Structures are given as C-alpha cells and as structure tokens.
Image (cartoon, rainbow over all chains, first blue to last red; front, side, top):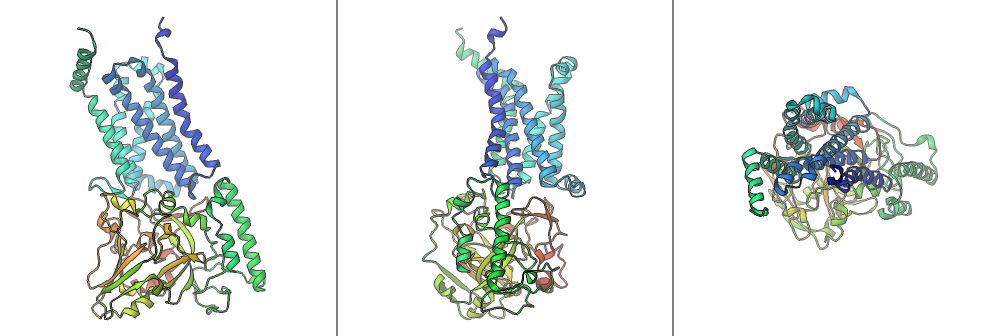
Length: 214
Length: 337
C-alpha cells in the first residue's frame, strides 16, 4: 500500500537532473565549448552546479510548506548528495587539474586566502551531512541527526561568500561582479526565512484554510 | 609572410567548434612546429639560430623583413613573422585571443564578449587628447594610424592569473604624447573608454562605475614598451580585444590596458581608475605584475598560460624587469601595489 503512494517518476526525474550537468560538461568538453581556459571553466561550472543543487535541496521543505506536497520530501536526500557530489568534483578539479596536487602551492592558498578558507569551511560543513545521510545514521542519531543537518544553512551562506569572494567584486559595497552570488544568496536567505517555525506554521495553516473544505 | 598570418587567422568557428581541447592542443603544437620551420626556411636561417630562451636578458632574435631592428633590443619593434616572444614562449592563437576576453562593457562572461561585440561600430572614431598639453587635438583613427606602426609580441598577464602571448600592431604612446606636448605640470595620463549602452550592454550594469577609465604615471606612459594597439596578428584589432584602439602596458595586469579609448587626458593629480574605484584595497593604481605581492583575495605567484595544462611561475614585471624596473627605483612595491 505504502509503495503505491510514491511517485517513482519524481525520483527518476531527480536522478536525471542529478547526472545531467555532468553529462553536459562531458559533452561540452568534447565539443570544445569550455572556453580556451577549460580547466578554470570546468572548475567554475562545477562550483555553480553545486550551488544550484544546494539551493534545490534547501527549497524542498519550503516547497512542502507552501504546497503541502509531501511526495517531494524524500527527494531532499538525493539532492543533498548531488550537491556534495558536485562540490567534491569542484574541489578535485581545483586540487588535481588546476594545481596538479602541488601541496606547496595549495596549502598556503587554503589557509591564507579568504575565499578558499570559506570554501574549505563550506565543504567541511557539507561533509558530515553527506556521511550521515544513510538510514543507519538517521535511525541511530535520532534528534541529533536533525540538529546536525541544520548545518546546511550556515553551509549555504558560507558557500555564497566563497562564490562572491572568488569573483572580481565586493558583495558588501555592491560594487563589481556580484550579481550572481547576490541573487543566489538572496534566494538562500528567503528559503531560510521560510523555515522559521512561526512563519512556517502560519503558511501551513493559511494553506489549509484556503484549500480544505471547512 | 602576410599569407602566413592570414593562414593563422582562419575564422575561429572553423578552427575549434568540432575539435576537442586536447586534439586542438596537438594540432596547435604541430602547426607551431610547421610555422616555425617554414619561417626559418623562408628566411634561410639555420634552425639552430632560432629564438633562444633568455632569462629576461637581451636575446638575439632574427627580425623578419627589411626593418630588422638591432638584435640587442630585447623586445623588437618588428616582430612580424616571429612565432614566439623574446623568452621563446609561443604565440597564442587568434582563436584563443579573440574568444577569451575580459571586457565587462559587453559581458562578464569571457566567451560571451566575441558574439556581443560583433556589430560594434569602430568607424568613424575619434580620440580627444587634452588636459595639461600645449597642443590639444582630436584625432580620427586614421590620423592615429599615421604614427609609426610597430609589431610587438607581448605577454599579457590577467589579474585572474591567466596569461597569453599576443602579437600586437600599434604605435608607441610616447609618439602621440610628444605630438600634443605635455606641459611641465602634467604628471599623469588618464584614459577613458567609450560610454554607449546601446552598443555595450554591460555598461547598463549599475554595480560598476562606468565609463571604464584607467591611468598611468607620465613616465610609464612615455616608456618605449607602452603602446596603443591598433591591430593584432597583422589584422585590424578585433572588437572583442578593444577595437579600434587600446592601451597595452605589458608589465601591468591586463585591466590596466584599457580598451576602446575615446579620451586621453594629461593631469597633475593621480587619476581615478575603474577597478580602484570598485575596490581600492585590491586594485592599486600601479598594478604592476608582481608574483611577490598577492591580490588580497588570491595569489599572484603562478599563472596558467592559455593553452597549457600546468601552471607557470609568474615573472617580476611580467618578465619585463630589465626594461621597466628602473621606473620604480625606491618605490615600495608592496605599499604601491
């Protein structure tokens, strides 16, 4: 009975969306569509893809709050893992392709440059979430699992700082090349606000009043 | 040789669209070898007399054509036909130079500049040269082409830590400045880009202080290596690279080399510059290429030459140390970044 209520097409769609960016990247590589500086382009594209998946992950709960569509909730885990997957690829390209694992160059950067400190911090926030995403941990950790996974919010904001600081602009004075990180930062902030309990309860009750017959 | 240059300048769409990056690299390697060989054969030069890698010092490069400059000049005025810079770095291809452009007047996406700039109107074009000069003048682009045009191969190092080797055609800015006769009070030169939102959509972005402007100290502007480029690869300058005329200051980060210039002004005070206005702690007035002074947010120690997989060590003053270091004697390059 339980299985009949599921929407496998939604699950399939999430996995198609999950692999599509990588497939496109591979196609772009072989059709020479990654600019004449492909290492940097791949690196930056992977970073942006990870941001998009992060936003999608964060959007699931507010989407449920607003629509009451329960079916989307279990899809959050796959989206979160795709976020981690693309963030990991982004970092591997940085370490391996961009810097050829040259630790004497990489280490001073990772601990000396603010945008990379933010990047490392964001990844270290995502890492425990990915590791504990299995049912085993969800069962075992109980309430602590929820507490731990709340880290996705600070992770989202740190990711935006990492994104903004890697571009030629200043997100605090609103000068320079900042529009993309600004837009995604704003979206993450709205999604965060939508999760605040009082607002969430108000939205849910309003929805029920509007759409349920008395 | 004109033919050879035309050969290099195949429309980019024909070169790259269907070949992968790696196979293009192989192709370019092969093409490079072929063109070096044909060049040497055409000149009757023994292959052992080819460009020699020097350590910033003078290298003897056989100039091509009748106007061969003295071999002791590290950066020859007539580089036509050469396939490397004076440090034996091969030229980047026209395709690379015209499809990877930081030109925010059109777009912040480097590969979007080429298509967006295709209908950019470069004629008629005039440049107003004024300020503290005896002889202010407005030049048409055709007047500027009367200054002695030279072929210079320069490395261009972007502040984003990538670089290219580009064969420019242009004239020394000093020739133009002598023509307008700077007053003794003139200490700086300010440059301004065309402001035209209808042609340059990026200028509608309110997060940037348009129009783009840049500046040099007068002695930097008068330096032999500072040119106004009017062409590249033996052709007129492509729009995405700053047509019809742009500054090229090879020992400074690329953003100093302002594009599509409409105004040159001599001033007594150090002029404001575009990136300095956006973030003064990050983009100084000097912005000399310096591997020892990092941009506050990222390292400047290494760079990726476009077309190469590994990173290179960035050279002091982008490898022009011998020519330009004397401009900065006694200046703290960390404080004056």
